[in-house]
Length: 382
Image 1 (tube, rainbow, N blue to C red):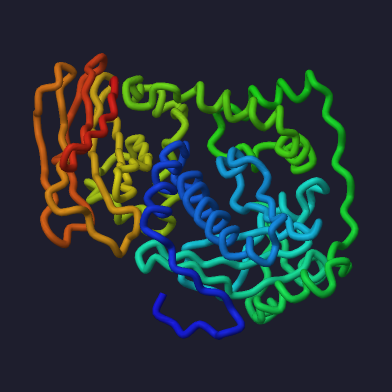
Image 2 (tube, rainbow, N blue to C red):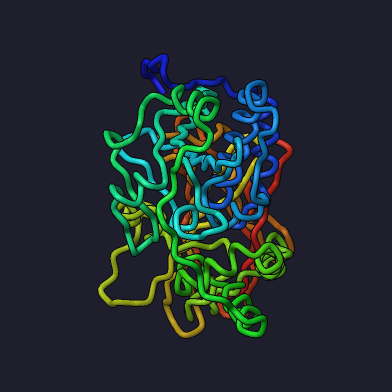
């Protein structure tokens, strides 16, 4: 975050112990996105609460942290006004992205929306602009694909210090536009929906927004959904990933499509072998949280015969511009935990990859990542 920050904006250093504690909490995230949601929102709420507590002693944080498993953002209540914090680690401050939940769920809708940039490497939090609910509804663009509102940076109020003054001098300012009520959901319907959402990659986009909003804003139903999704992956490091299921597009929670995560760079993730026949290839990625970094485990599975698969495994840094920790080891283990193949990261490696290997139907193997005293292992069954 190499930039001059105007005095009307807010910049706060992130204490190392706070960052470490947030990373520990983030390990509960079931996906890459959820991990970052937990980390960023924990930093934003804790640091801003500390900074504002002197002037606003009645400040309150809500909702429960479990919402970060699904939605980015958190709320500080100041003088009966909701200040929605929208933390991001993006370098580009060209626009503010607001999940629809904070705009169109009556029980959640914010009065003010604060753009918060967090740089974990520089250990710095930067509040660079804000807007009101009224301004957002009248000026923002709505993206129906990912259910977010987008407001260009020039449409934000850059004088963040003025927001605190408004809260002290004019706490009754009208800030919200009209919000349509959500449809009611019967208990039986809610339970059926929760069962459906327990295993899908992104539950907030799976059902109509009105139904999702009703479920997410109800603490009991939301907690139930978290329990169901955690139960589906209660043993993520010991339960075997069945590659036959992968070929049927069935994946355990946490495994995401490489194309969805890397976009146009997905083809570059592997040195994929060119074949003359269009054999089925499945590629998935999963986040592995180590004590000091977040890594990506990529697995490519290609059908060679009815009883044999060709498999390729790669370990990458989460940030495409970052490097792997020197000395980290990626290993292929037999079902008896014998090391079959291994590769070690050198200085400046941003990815390491095991040689392509073949496995017969019914064979089990493990992929292990070792860094110092930390070991993470994923089991697979062909």
